[in-house]
Image (cartoon, rainbow, N blue to C red; front, side, top):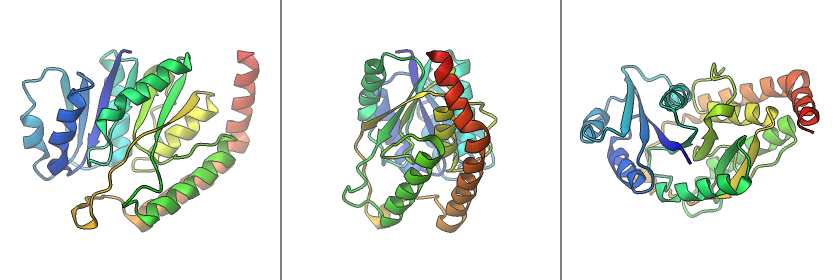
Length: 246
């Protein structure tokens, strides 16, 4: 498959180098989006400057994970890739599991796909707030799309770059991944969950930029909007596309 790995990063200099090195064992082409990091991220990326298969997109001010994803997906498409696997830079994802997503995509025998790397939400060290947030998100996703997924908040995914929703994304932070998932479902892109590993470091070592109150509020507002949009656009769109494909 003609694919690259997309790694959005913000102040994860301690883990980014390790993630890139491990990714290179399974994927030779990487796009890193430096989302205005203020730590040693630039130095870490500089240590890979001789590798011409690593493309770095940087800007000085942090604009959010959603913004970084949008730029990264656009860059991957500009570089001529057909698919992009997104991996977080905080060390929670196992880049070694990328072949699992590729295998799921190949077995689907379908070009309009979005493979969702589903985490074990009962894994050791899984924060309780993450489990609640994911169950909350899973419920509303099913309401908005009539489709069921075990993990709608995972950032470990394989996107078909030729079947993405409009990348003029409404949101710019964590909720963007939910937005992309819902709009893909409305376009009748085949959603394929596949189980992947996840690692949660001890609390004292964990680096998280998720702000519980602010980010959960934004996700709630997005879900409210998507419920109304489902009535006016989502449900009719899925029905019409299904009839056309038949």
